[in-house]
Figure (cartoon, one colour):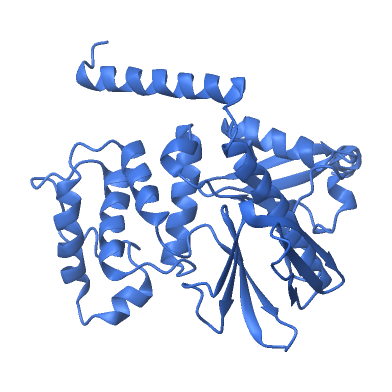
Length: 337
C-alpha cells in the first residue's frame, strides 16, 4: 500500500489533474504539465471533442472570490486564480455568439454545443422566451432528441415528464402537463423528416431573434448612482434601465465605438463621432470591468472578422461540412451506399 501511495505522489508531482464539463460530457485529463498554458489546455479539450471552430468557446471557472472568470490563454493555468482543489474544474462553454447561426456555425459539433447551451439558458430563464415560441422550440428539441413522431409507437406522457418549457411559461397558464404535451406534440408531428442537425439549427435560428440571446449582462451604475444593466453582445453594447433587460435605452454598435477602457471601477465608452459625448459607468468591482473589457475585445474581433473574406481554413471547413452533409443525405436516401 505504501508503494502505491508513493507512486501516486510521484505521478501527481509531475502534473495536475483537470476536469472539464461540456454541455453533454465530462472529461478528465491526468498529468497536465505544471507549467502548461491556458492555450495548451484549451487546445487539448478542443482536439478531444473534435471541435475546430474554437474561437467561440472558452474555459469558464469561478475565481477565489466566487466571480465568473475565463481561463486566459496567454498565462499558465496554475498561475491564474483557479481552484486549488484537485481536479481543477472548468466548464467548456460558448463565450462569444455568432450574429447569424446559419451562416457562421459550420461543424455539427459546434451547432450541437450551441443548441444545448441556448436550450439550457431558455429553460433556466436566463433568456426570456414568449410562450408560443417556447412551444415551437420545445417541438424542435423533441425532434432532435427522438427523431420523427410516430403515432403507433408514441407513448402518452413521454413529453409531460420532460424538461421542455421555461417555468415562467408553465406558471403563466392554467394548463395540466398533459395539455402542454398535446400542444408540443402537435408541433412535433409537423417536424417529421427533419434530421437532428437541422432541428437543432432551426432551434437556434428562432432563438437568435430573442432579445436576450447571446447577451452577457452586468449590473452597473451611472454617475448619478442610478442602477443600470450593461449588455455585451456580438453586435455591440447596450444600456438598459431598471430591471428591463429586453429593450435597451441606449445602443452602441461596434461600428460606432472608437474604443472602450477602464480605470479602477470607472468604464468609458468612446464613440467614433467626435460630437458624441463619452458614456461613463461604474462597475461594482474592478474584476467586473476586466471581464467586460475581455468580452468587448473578443466580440469586436469577431465582428471585424465577419466583415472580411473567409480565410482558407474557414473555406476548407465549409467545403468539408458541405461534403459531409451531402454524404449523409445520400446515405439516408440510399442506405446501401
